Image (tube, rainbow, N blue to C red; front, side):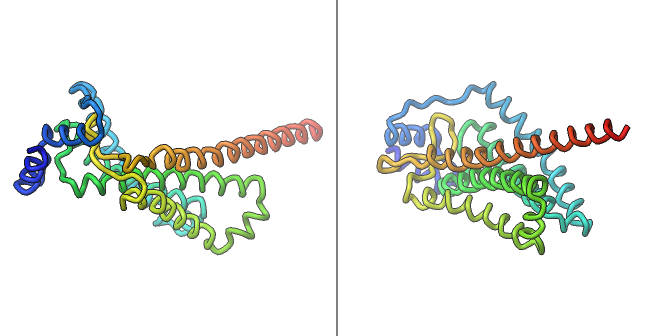
Length: 247
């Protein structure tokens, strides 16, 4: 009866019958269904709307401003910033409105196909953003600490283009096995009426992907900026020493 009600609902108006789907999810996952409170959903909805209203125009302005000026758009750092703004724009214009519908209805009502596809877009956006921030940190590190190497490696813009392609390819490579069902799967999570990572055949990719997708970039970003700060302080100290000696 549960399967029949879900199928009937999908065929009629491409919406989930939430009670039936919750029952099937509980049966498949052995989990107790615990929904977010209405008050918490209202708070989450407020921030979704706020980020959409602020994020979409701000990221559009960032992209437009950097691309209109030739000196700005030829900078490797600015090219990475444009990539970051595009990823954030997709997040604000696509992912957050979908999340908002979930908080309004306190259910997933967009169908099974989108329930599988949405985590690919949502987590892919996050991965691209994090990887781009890592590339920006590496870029700044090379500029400040290894200027000569930076000028040789980044001449012509090929290295920056490769870094941008890598960010998107890396995100896709991490998530496609789960989307294909080869390493866990994407599907409905009854406890939060969301679509996210699910275990399949005892395998769940989420902890490994979060370790790789968040832990590795942080392990690169933190030392890069720590070294940049150390070099900047040393240069500042040297400058002060020189002025004092000359004065």
